[in-house]
Every structure is written in structure tokens, then in C-alpha cells.
Amino acid sequence: MKERRGEGSGNCFLPRLAAFLLFIAAGCANASPEPTQATLATTTTATTLAAPTEVGSNLEELEEGLPRSSSYSFLDVSLERATLANIDPRSYLTGDHVAGADRYLFLSLSVVNTSNTDTANWPINPFALAIGTDLVPADVLEGRPHIGLPPLQDTEMIVAFPVPAGVTFDDVALVLAEEDRIPMLLPLTGEVPTDPYPYVVELSGEGVAQGLGVGCRQSLYVTALEGWLSIDLLDSDYPTSYGSRRAMIGDRFLTVSLHVLNNGGYRCGGGASNFGNQDVRLVVDGSPSEPVTWVNAALGLNAAEEFEFSFTYPVEADSVTLTIGSEEATLLAIPIVASPPPLEVETKG
Image (cartoon, rainbow, N blue to C red):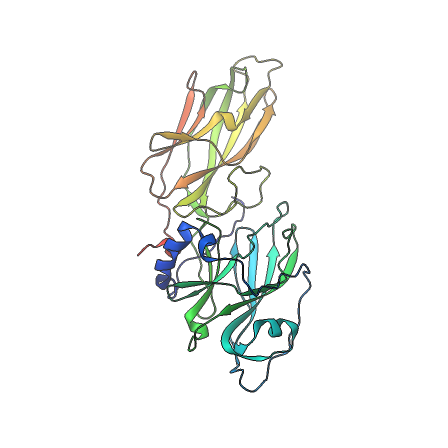
């Protein structure tokens, strides 16, 4: 199994987030309008800010536990600095640090796109702050690329949130979320959440599958190698039709690795046979679904290759079977037995 990453469970802060997760599942767009005071700079150059010292700013600087990081799909998000202060956010960004009546939390972030292939095209305001059961959208952003973050590139960002008086660093967590997707949670203090994914799925089975390919009755010998559940579709040789590489709330991605040998049981042209998405289905509670990654290859006579197919896997599924081949001929069926570990960020109460 290739090395993969995931985010989020297991922190004393997380149970307090149950109420707003219902809101995330309904879509963050309704509660995250474009900030009226937003400064959206196109530069990805880091902004260096002197520590504000004005009388009346009630400055508090987080002194311990930084930097700390989490990830969302192929984005690594690192919190480099956190400041609570009564400072006008626009003046904070310009370095003037004018004391104001409202209290803000200023977060300096480093964001890295670890993908070798994909540009990170995030929403206009992807960050929010969890305060108890409330989800507060960012009021100011600086450094967010307008056209997305290219592969293997990084950017420095400053995000500001209005907070009530009395809020401390212990009371909040940074949230990165898309509509209906499993969110990233990064508490400012305490342990950074870890999650149990990728989760290895016991996968075994082999046999002949016929009726494969287009206009072909070639015979292929298929061996199931391994399987795993994840919450992210990371870099792959295969593009995805899922629309996002982050799983929906209530779903996981199931990836299966298959060894396929064209043993020439039937003649088809020069003995070659196509193998790909048209030949593989995941049957969940009786309903077949196609892979969310696209695979199509021609296997020559006596040639063998390993393939990976990824599917959406509902965590509440009762019966799951991987099928390979055509119902018109020989269908190889491999049962999938898995108990997806829960994520506390999906807890509804």
C-alpha cells in the first residue's frame, strides 16, 4: 500500500463540535459569506509582522505548541503564529496595529500543496473558526492565491477571526472545509487530532474473469492484492470523477489493488484485451457503482499489470462485494468485509 495521510479524530475539543458539523453537512457556503473587510492579496510571499505593542490592544501571544499542523486532502496546513488582540484587522495586515474596540484572533499559516499533479482550487473563504458550537468565518485573509495553489508550491497566509471577549486559545480550533466534506480540525492547544486512516481492509480472492474489454471475450486471471479505506484520494496515476479528493461526510474511499494477467483463454484480435473501469464494480447493498478513478489499459497476450481502483464506500453499508468481469460470462466476486473506524468530526450528537 502506498503511503497515505489523513486527518482528524481523538481530541478532547472535538465532542464540542457536534452541533456545527450538522451545519457543515448542510454546506458552509450559507454561513461563510465573503468577508466585508477582506483583503485578498494575489502574492504568495510571506508577510512579516512586528508584534503589536499599542496600549489598549490587550495583546496575547500563543507561546507554546507552535508550529502545529494538520492536513486536508493534499494540503498541509501549519499554524505558525497565533495572536489575540483588540486591533483593527486591516491595520494589523498593514503593520500599523491600530488599537480597536473589537477583539480578533490572528493566525499566520503556512500552506503547502503536496500533490505532484493537482492544483489546489479552494473556495473563496475556506477557513473558519470553531468556538464552542459556533462556526465563525474568517474576516480577513491575505496571501490566498486567486488561481489556486500549483502542485508542490506553498504560500503564507494571514487569517483573522472576530472573537467574543473572554475567548482563549484553548477554546478554539481552525476549520478547513468544503460543502458536505469531512472537515479538517486543528485545535490551537492540546494534542493535534490524529485519525485511523488509511485503514487496511483484508482482501483476498483470485480467479478467471471473462467477458472483459470492448468487443472481446478474452480471459484474464485476476488476483486481489490489498485494499484500504481512506478519507482522501491523493496522488494517483488515475484521474478522478469524484469532484474532490476529500470524502463526503458519511463516506470513505475504498481503494483495491488487483494483479491482472492476460492468459489468453480466448483469442481477441492479436490476443490483447482492454481492462478498466467498465470491468469493475463495487456492489453496495445490492447497488453497483463505478470507480471514481479512471483506469483503462490494453493488456497484451501473456502480459500482466497491477491496477488500483477507488470507490466511494458508505460507512453504514451492510453488504459490499467487488465484482470483476461481465454478467454475460464469468463474474469474479470478492466480498469486502470492513468496519470503518469512526471519525469524531462526523459525530452528530
